[in-house]
Length: 168
Image (cartoon, rainbow, N blue to C red; front, side):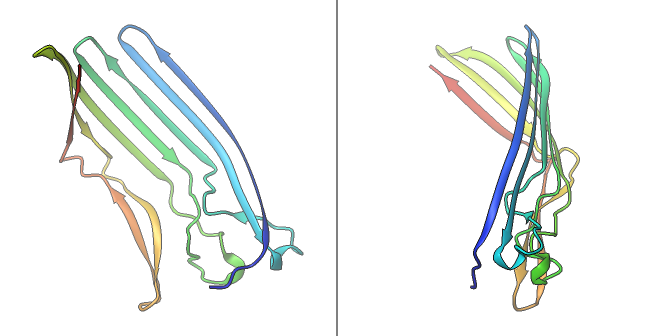
């Protein structure tokens, strides 16, 4: 593989909010960041391209009821289109110009707390990606077939996961 000298720059901003009372919880966060690069051959144009970890906007939130025994939480995550590792246009001057589709996921959790055998138990059932949205998380270049294969993260909301936590 050929490597070329270049320069990079990165900057960002992160904000979060958290509110809790006896029964209700809300938390939300926003991250805005840029990770840019340019290679030696592009120095004359002065243009920086998005780097591999460039994710301009990420928004996360969760809200729900948390009581002494029961809890119900709904959470969401959305991120803007981050760059692909392989160029879909497959020309050298377009490296870093291609972006994946916007990512969005909505999750839910239902929990129950109780004491048994002198231990504190917390049992949770979680449903991931309630909208069954096929979120693209990557592209892989197939050298034999000469095309990009899309990698998607698809929730299986009909198959919940269960978590058990025991505290002494």
